[in-house]
Amino acid sequence: MEDMLNLSNEQMEKFRKLLTPQGTEHLRCIRDSYGDGYKLSVMIPTKTKKIPHHVHFREGIAIRNFLREVTDCAWTDYEYDDNWERVTLEAIK
Image (cartoon, rainbow, N blue to C red; front, side, top):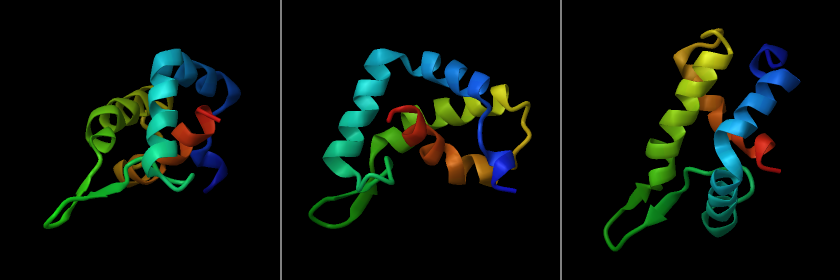
């Protein structure tokens, strides 16, 4: 199952083009500022509770939709939700 959830080299190149250098830098900044090297959509503490970082909603949904396109919807919705960060971290190394 794990092999199925990896992008081919061609798909990864398309994904990197989607991200653009500015988007890649933005995501690296999020990873370095809030993440632990393994997450982008970290929980940000406020005075009363923790809230998800906006990258999960804004960039994350765009990335998940793009992944659906390049993989011809080969993954389940849960797999896109569970793996978009992993694929993104691989792309922005």
